Length: 235
Image (cartoon, rainbow, N blue to C red; front, top):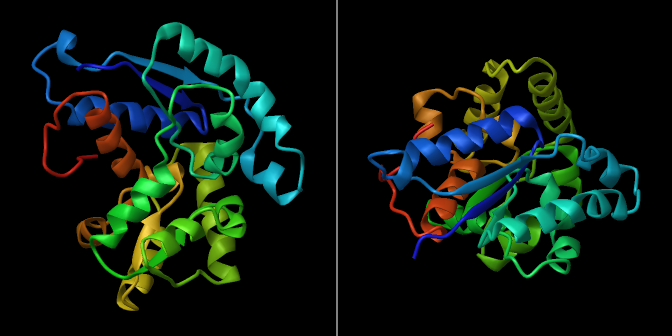
């Protein structure tokens, strides 16, 4: 059965565009009418998720502004909602109480995918994602070990992420170096920020790292009742 998909985007706009393109490129379809019906709501003015978390501000700052989006999805009749922002998932439990439409939990499915490739992971993301430990319960759930980034690399990741947000420049030699550093230590890097997912990785690194956005792309296609065009999600 074919189902409509809702994408809560704008976090950030470039990442949402890349996510939408990945769904289109990886859905088995021969014409326009064979693609997924998608409601892409690019709500770019949602407050910065990392700032709300690190400053211990009330979750209502995020939840209240998203309520109308959930109503819009309900009105369109979507069967699943996907949000490609990892840090946003820190607010997921609050939002799930406001609608009967299920969210596709990117954190859960990404960690489950990582389990297929090894026993040690390293989460690469924003300070909001890293310091709240939103991946931790799923790492424990799937019996993985977590090799954590140090403070210096955590700061570097923030610089990389916010540079992309401000410039839309998706080249980063440093991210490739960071990924290789953890791969050399026997840990699987998880790209746990959609800005990081937009970066061009060296082929060898791309084949070994787990990209949360690609995992979400695959799940969105399958849960919408469609088939994958390729065995591995292409960028």
